[in-house]
Length: 181
Image (cartoon, rainbow, N blue to C red; front, side, top):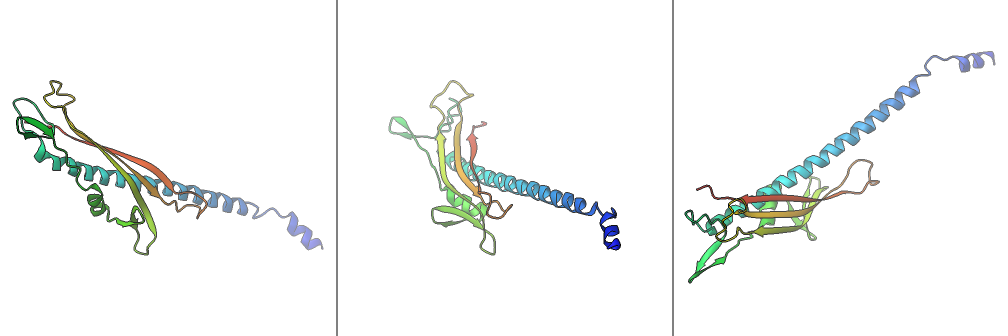
C-alpha cells in the first residue's frame, strides 16, 4: 500500500498530457489553415479560368468590332444597309472553361473529379453580361467593349469529415476590349 501512495504522489511525467494536448491543438490549427488555403487556391484557379474564357469571348468579338479609327468607335457593330446594327458573339464559355479546367458535365453541373472519382469542385449558373461600347461616343473613357461574368463555385471541405458544409461562392470576373489604334 505504501508503494502505491508513493507512486500517486510522484509528480514526474505530469507535463506529458499537456504536451500531447498542445501538439494535437497545433495539428488541428495547421490542418484548418491548410484547408483554408486549399479552398482559396481552388477559387483563384476557377476565377482565372473563367476570366480566360471570357477574354477569349471578348477576343472573338474583335472581328465584329467596327474599325472606325478616325471616328473612335470600338463597339461591336456591323454595317447593315445604311445603318449599323449591334453584333455580339457570346461564344461557348462553358466549352472553353471545360477545356481549361478539365471539367466534365454531369447532372447540371460542370465538375472536376480526382483520379479516384472524388469531387474536387463544381461550377454552375454562368451568367455573362456583354456591354457594347456606345456607337459614336465622344467619351473615350466609357468607349469600351466589356464582358462581366459570374459563376457559382462549390468546393467540398475536407476538414472535419462531413461536419462542415461545402464552400459556395459566386465568382465574378470582368474583361474588356479597347482599341489602341
